[in-house]
Image 1: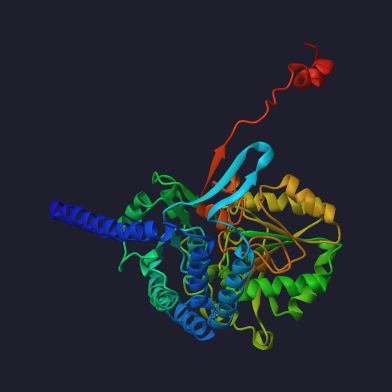
Image 2: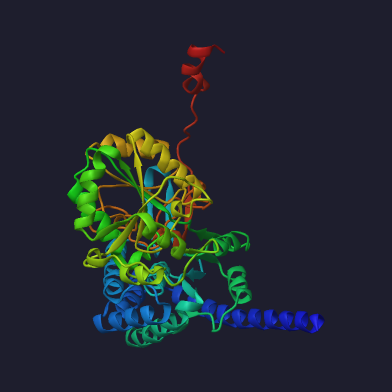
Length: 480
């Protein structure tokens, strides 16, 4: 019996690889035609067609409703907003960017830079953002002359298929080859995803860290992103009311599906009374006594997050945990639990993917910075840290001292980290976490990661320095 099962597994893997090979061959043929004789307008037209598929209001609503219905994650209104703003922001970022042909002439260096596509890009996308993330990847890929094949999470496969169906209709209107954007057949499998990773020319992986590790070991150049577990510090100089409004807006958006949603507040003791009152006014409810224990027990089952609470609203979370807040339930938008420890024995110190905030109270800012570092070392290193403060030098200090690629200052974290119209970060739903997060990039994934640059190199006047120019200062200090 075991032998028959092993043979069946081998057959299934072989079939999966053959199916993927066919998809990749179609994508490669479409990409070659897309690139041949292309100018910038061809790439831009395809990218705009993909973007309009989602930004057209009726389609945006349809896809947002289907995403929530099928995944059970987030809420429709916020997904509509996310789909629109993330796509519009991306289009703003790439509007005047050259990604086709000669993109720079560096006369004094004798170098001409030429943009070239990667070829066929594979994108592994999560169920938390089953529409916005694929579209972001598709637009970036097409802008740079690539074909792209999606590997969606099983929970988000249905809405991803509908997205590509609608995109095919838009491509027909715009004269774009639909084989430029495809997805793995469903039901998919790890074998199919693995085959896609190995056959593609470039990988972008957002979601589980298992997929990120598999991508890095696939033999294909890969961009993977790290785990979120955002810590936000509120110090004694912060505007408590403004901080509470921003924290609440970020924590509640799309029921905390974002990896950039706050998971822990580290609050300087002097600031806590004002901040607590302001958070309560914004819909935050601090749970104490038996309710504290009930929520922790309900949120974590056998060491894992309870799926019945992930990305659900506060009322649902309370109901699953069997908690009755009485009159305090009115207006409750998110829940707070005081915490102390950090590490595997203290689950509140990790990512919660729900409208639940851990609150740590510290004596002073230095203690808060140290605690934030410990939490990030446990989970979320490299991703981002937030701070609400009146002292900008403290934000710079966090950037100098903590293992983080982003310090978000006095902003709603989940909006700011992935690009916002009032900051200069690239619009993205995928955050590179640098060496701290075991990632190959420390930037938001954006258009530049979807192309190669060829350099034509010419001779120039020699620039060889005398050895004294290089070592003069060193010799004066320590001798020859």
